[in-house]
Length: 507
Image (cartoon, rainbow, N blue to C red; front, side, top):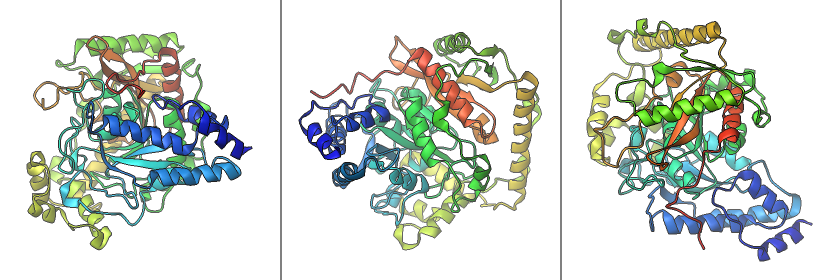
């Protein structure tokens, strides 16, 4: 039967990959209308037409030269016994700070050119084990520094927003976001320290999940700050993001912070895909996250329409829902920094041995092989202390984060909230090269400081319906299933996601 299905797929009309979902791909394969080899081939054709040619999205750094061979292998396995896993033949775009066996991994920096990891990052290993194919490594803001734009020293030029080619993708996972939004791959993996899954997802009409600290492993992802680093999925639909999330969650001995995950698993995140999931939910509008003098009035209007859509879908809205006492919480600055980029990167590089061309931040600076815009930040990091986990700086940081968590939870308990919502960015995507106008990033504080989860979901478009805007749904620790349920119900009630005009179907 499987062989007959494959034969039928050879003569069937081409499957259109634009805006395709995992479920649609698998349905077409089961029906004999699509092979894995044909699917990968279609994405490779789109990459050829649109990433460095045509609109020149410039989102990808390295293509997997074995992708077509891996697809053929999966077709043979499918013919014998069906799907190998829940992500069978899902072409994944992987951010260039994830170790990927056999593919160069650089963190966006020339200083790491030529680094071929000995093994996959934990999340890459998980998605491969579920049947996915790493199709390409994506461009990123060098060292994952910038939340505002995607430019580095390993790939000339900026990554462009496929919705408006003169606009930024946000950062640092902007390459993953642009390529998934343009249907150069089916789903993507990004990392988020302060913004970098949710921000690019907002700018490109995607769903991005930043998990509870400890629910997903960062092992094999080059660090920016392990106090806040998270790795996770980016996709065109809530369902696809949940499908990837289901595969990557769990404990990993190579990332000790995930030891707590086993107490909160297993969970069936796909069971949370309930169109009526907002009925009975109590949602608070977190004005503190986005109200500032520079907030764009059109973005605020779009968000308030989204709040009304939540209400119409069955949620009880508490507006405003202010986190009390935040202004009085201070971190003891005199204690110094806690770990941070220098501490984490030096230990990461040392663990790679001779596989990496540089062994420390000091060597990186001496090499000069980095984007000029990052020089001051690199040099300042090198001048500062490393301060390990037992330092006064880390003790002060732990105390500060716990106080913020307590304030958020006390407010949620008092108001009986299931989640907060706010615009992921208060301003539209900037013009490329513009670092002067208001950026509008609202993602740096609440989720990264508390370690609580947050999901971005498309909420509409500004500037005549051209520039995407996203809404963040933020909740308690380990509440991902609940947040996925709310995001899915909102998505199904509104259907804001649409493909960018710059990368139409190939004919």
